[in-house]
Image (cartoon, rainbow, N blue to C red; front, side, top):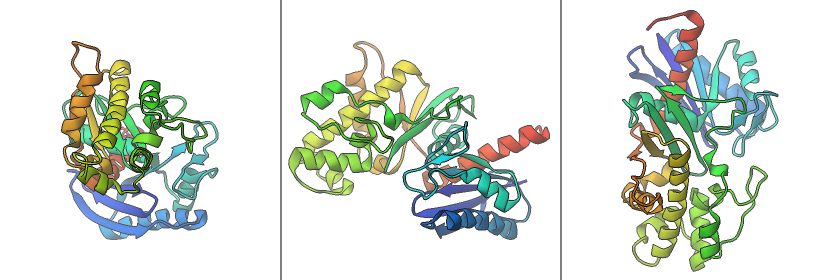
Amino acid sequence: MNTLGIDLGGTKIEARVFDAAWQEIARHRIPTPECYDQLVDAVVAQIAWASDAAGTVAAVGVGAAGLVNPQTGLTLANNLPASGRPFPADIERRAGRKITFLNDCRALALSEAVFGAGQGKSVMMALILGTGVSGGLIIDQKWRTGPTATGGEIGHIAAPAQIIAAHGLPVYDCGCGRKGCIEGYISGPGLQRLAAFVTGMDLSTHEIAARRTTDMAQVWAIWCALVAEVLHHLTLTIDPDVIVLGGGLTAMPDVIANLRVAAKNTQIDGFAAAPLALAQGGDASGARGAAYAAWMDHRNATGLTV
């Protein structure tokens, strides 16, 4: 049985087809359109491509940035032209088939739990550090969701007051409508904002990382301390077997080692910090996780045992 996973981001729509052994057998990437109708058509076109390229596709999963309100079916997305629209329902209507739609970070979390750094762990938490900050909770290789469908939106917890006050950092407005969300400080743009505030220099994340032991040392220390507070929050509330870190910022040199030290310094004295691991799936993880979620839905709907 072939399964299609689509990783939908602000710049690209990547489709990957997996066989019954979860080996990738085909992939296709197209740019993300800037208007809603074209966006829906593009996702539908990727579904049609998969059928042409790999034969019958039994299940389709779409992992996309943003949230879908379970009460209204409407989408909230900062980097897709889909906010306020019934995006999953419109894809299903135009494709003429059922899809499984989930947040892209939750898709990556599921992929890592089943195939990657979270294998063999009963409770795995993913924390994605990139253009935004989000994550997902996986229990016994099953994606955990709840009645609000906002679980995993870790970037929208409040930034720690003691660190904000100690460094005189501004309280930023957030795209979610609140103020002072941690995403505004530890995402890629947040790291750049920190550097600009502390040093007055406008640098890329790559430049900041390259200079983290010289003139960006204070910026790096503040960023690590802020991320460590998120790790501490996850540890106190969930206490997972492992926290898997993914996203573009985790490609920075020594990031896992530095965050392990910062997390240990943040934890309650005498207690261990949560184990950290780097996501293993690379840029295939989101598509594979979306495909796996769709496969599980298909299995449950049809009564398959394998």
